[in-house]
Length: 329
Image 1 (spheres, one colour):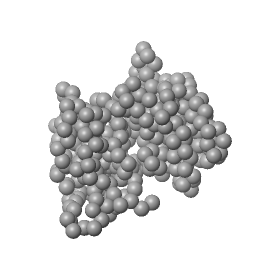
Image 2 (cartoon, rainbow, N blue to C red):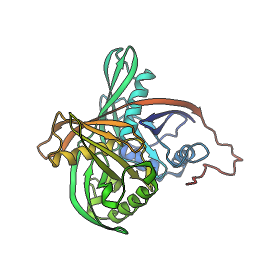
Image 3 (cartoon, one colour):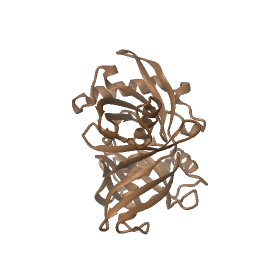
Image 4 (cartoon, rainbow, N blue to C red):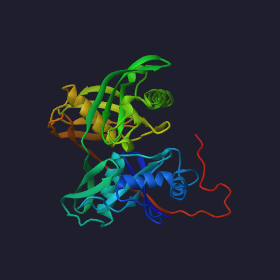
């Protein structure tokens, strides 16, 4: 199994480049369901995400055939707990990878588009190169929208009001101060505990439902600190707790789309403004609204950087008693 590893603003992303099993389906969503329900396929995800080949915060993807005309490939995003419907940091990494490996014919100076099909729809990575070197990647996401505001959730710390928004996946957004915390590394453990509790409380409720049931479920809980404004728009710091307590080291790409929808609805962000979105480790994405639909949803663009960290070939010794591995947290 051959992989190329990237990180986007600190969050890992493992691209399987050879040796992945064939995943059946006519669409990317169908292939996602097949991967989830086929033990022989899912075992490959486990092999690559679990220790000793991975770790509890590993993230990655399988590449599959494209679904829509003009797309270069389809993508199945995966993490320690399973398969996500969207992944902004992965989209940024894939854009950089496609240009650097020649998967797409790229301009030496300027912007090269890398369209791809993901479970939530078609997204496009716009890769900016200078002198043949990738400098930054901005991706245009599926439309983002507000699902609910001031939804009261019972927690051990008392009732907390959350906002729900969709950015390719469903996110619950909460000011970190509402649970007596700040988005700082020293509060990491408490933020994870609060995020898991809020996500569990919303599971199975109407707020966790998408019109396409395959996209349903609250994927992550975003805790945010407001840092005021820059000369171009709001400045916030956030951390996304997703899956079963996994923490996004980046500012979360699809989560940033969800935040943009909410900030636009609040009148805090207009077209042309920039959300400076910091992560818990101090890395940054820039988020913009490109257009507003008649139904109130917004077209968003998230900009960041991605860097290759290595290439590996993984094997599974048939006599290895650990099999596809383990996770120790």
